[in-house]
Length: 79
Image 1 (cartoon, rainbow, N blue to C red):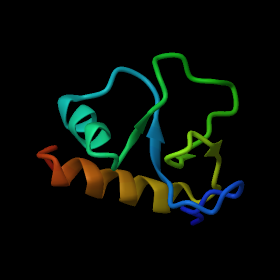
Image 2: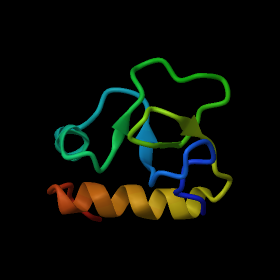
Image 3: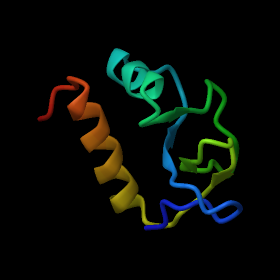
């Protein structure tokens, strides 16, 4: 899993698309998650750095685990 921006080297956060849950909005306001908007591109990126660079990492499991950890930390119910 590559959570460092390939353009500038800054640490990245998970990037999600669609209507965000309240927990995702809270995480985004703390800079722990990036919101990509409602329209998902054909080849959606899954990480974003503080400078707005976006990229796709093939490790979907790592991304999913990081995303869930961020959401749970903001009160998202874990099954």
